[in-house]
Length: 387
Ligand SMILES: *Cc1c(COP(=O)(O)O)cnc(C)c1O
Image (cartoon, rainbow, N blue to C red):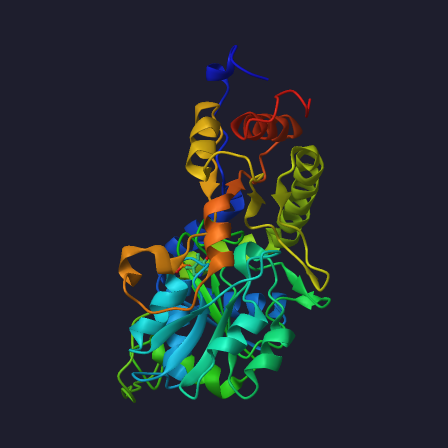
């Protein structure tokens, strides 16, 4: 499919949140209740989300980035400490280490799924390493048991921003996690506009996280209000305001019910892309043998002889297809210029030679053919092979 009439076709976006009347009604109900800040809906959303990802406790926060910050703060990680992270991630993964004054140490990733390579992690661990922060990149489950094995006594934390609904060894990602941080940004499956959560099985950690997100207060504003009587709060430690609102949580509760259906649908769409892409010599991301992806991001490695990714994206954009460059690499950004790191060949290859294809609930079979035709033309494979 080339040329004729293509300008008339609507642009296919890379992602689109699935939002309906139910979300609007749930938020409106909170507004009418008069209690719009952190309150009963947040508490309810915490319970429901933690249960969905197999954790005992959920602590809602303003976004995943603040959740990551709290996890490191909770563990007392600070100046002089090192935290091993993939450079191959959204920049917040590395930045949160700098927030506590510690040093992010980049390890390389596996070409198959873009997640931390245990061997590379082992090679950068020193006596200053205080944590390994693994990412479930694009919803692809990271092999947490393998990372724990190389980390030994060092805690393995999880940036699960993209991974709600993915599974690892037969259980939801998050099950058995020491500490995992989640995102509800509209680019992820479950959205609350902005929002995040930290999950853990440790009730004492959860209690401290609740305090840390709310100015270090001994009693939350919601509890004080609900108690009716006069209750004076104390400020037990210097902390943060990283709260979620009840409006967001009400939306999250509706979104959470949609999650299993969203994951199933995304997996069907990913399977169709797989099929359509197979004749093109482009390698799509696939489930590892130890888990299943929610396909938050569906990325494809370009064929070797294809033009640079920017050029591929440009040609696709001209055909009305909005793709994205591959996952970014933090060490290539100006914010990390001069930051020492080991060679990161796989990270650099994936970030330069992969593109993310559109995947969302409104994508039709015809749209997928359009995407793959545009992709095929862009990588200079003769067009028409998919139709
Ligand atoms: C989206 C994302 C974040 C940041 O999430 P926010 O909720 O926007 O703060 C962090 N890490 C990864 C891997 C992400 O994809």
